[in-house]
Picture (cartoon, rainbow, N blue to C red):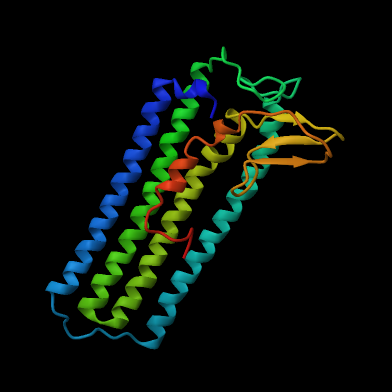
Length: 252
């Protein structure tokens, strides 16, 4: 991130709010899991509930369908991000290929002052990164705690059913998070936050914000390109890397 953004009260407050959201969701998740554990220790099981093979089969279908939907949602996000990246590159590139706030050698320009719009977009993106991570934490923790309670109270079969249904609800929630976040991640980050293209030797281009975890990609060239502000699309990278909740994977 360009040092100029670190001086912004708006961006700093947004970072604090995002961290608070993730920390709070993690606390709630841990509380749910702790209460579920206490329930298993203080409550005696009742007569186990059983289900017919057909019921188990149908419930597994629900979980399988929601998992596939979650996978398709993730793939759709990647596709939209790819096209938004290309559009953003054409919209935001400057004639000299340099990002604002950096000179041709990639060094910080000390006198650079980001505009209100840039700082507002940075703050907006930071907060909503926190909202998404908090949502994922709660979905994972809620599903796990419910299956623990049900499995203890009503038997292994009931616990398995609860786990499948809880996984379905979690996957639906993750799909919703992906769908509502497409425009923000793909358009806001890629277009508004500087999909800046720098020319490289050999006719290639440097693009900020590739797919997956890569933020910089170089295509079609054989030399060194101009540098740019990759930090502006990484506003909450440290937050997401360091404050991950109990969920171990994107979808299960």
